[in-house]
Length: 156
Image (tube, rainbow, N blue to C red):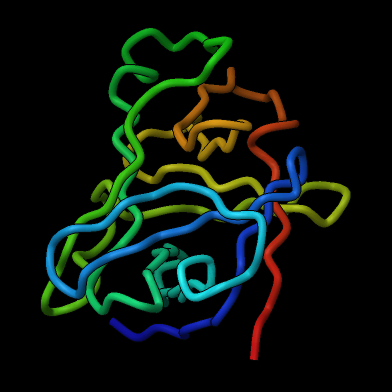
């Protein structure tokens, strides 16, 4: 499977903070936010020939963003504070492939911003609040808004 790697920062439109992935170079990593573009908010976005995206820490090879939205998918109801678990997974040999918790679709919205949807859990989107990184369920036909909207900033 071929892919392209993009060095970028993912910025919350609602809060102006950046998605941050830290790792120790092996299996452990954390997902939070930061107010500046730094080593942990500089990410590698991998676009595969299948149209699937993966988000990898730049400072910890093999550490990928992981989104378990099973609680959201079970209820199929938007929750006031979001839900699911966003953390990391480690793959020594690189991206694990489509259909895993580390696979995403990037949806370009009408204003040019982006919503990040789980491949494994359709209608479930990455969410950044003022205090947490988790997910949100959207009913079919409803466009993600507010906490689930991002700018993708390309970096050198």
